[in-house]
Amino acid sequence: MNRISHKLQEDKKLLSIYFTAGYPQLNDTKTILENLEKSGVDMVEIGLPFSDPLADGPTIQASSTQALNNGMTTEKLFEQLKDIRKTVTIPLIIMGYFNPILQYGIENFCKKCAEIGIDGLIIPDLPLEVYTEEYQAIFQQYGLQNIFLITPQTSEKRIQQIDEASEGFIYMVSSASITGAKNSFGDAQQAYFERIDQMKLQHPQIVGFGISNAETFDKATQFAKGAIIGSAFIKHLTENGTLQIESFIKQIRM
Image (cartoon, rainbow, N blue to C red; front, side, top):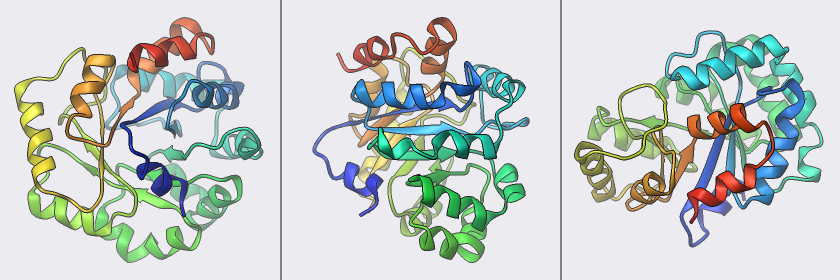
């Protein structure tokens, strides 16, 4: 069984962390992953930096730019992760835009992911139909789950189509804006969480965008299986480097 599917069966609310590979320093990737696992994080999304990130807020954009300036590339990331399964057992997902993956070669990329133990991919700009018609067979051949995103603007029909095509979880974007840490959720977001919960989808949802502290984590997971923290964690890395990762995680799971 894929590690993501296995993790989703656990009887608890899941905490996933996003960070940009190659940030703050080029070779921090492995250290961050090992420290996140030691801190009790359930899964990790490793951001593949890209020069034109459409959905990313200023914090993640800045980390992506810095990572590229540090020398991070797709090949470099694979090199850094080649022995990661000797020390890290939690599910690992690569999140990135389609262009760098296409440039690398879809099958080559998937094959490399399988070799190093990546469990899934999140590609925000890969449309559902293109995936199912052209790439699903390749993903499945290499045991990779493709995680789709939904937003408050996604129609119920579309959500059901995504649910049908999904294998692991559905990435539930908390708002239609770009990424970024928020201190609380408004009534509209709460209503959206409840609406999706009432749809009784086959696949669990994990909420991303705007999760930054214990309060937003608890609110997001009231109706969802888990939540993803990105910008707030990257800010922590900016201020502290790879130190004190455990203290950051403890603040979320108080």
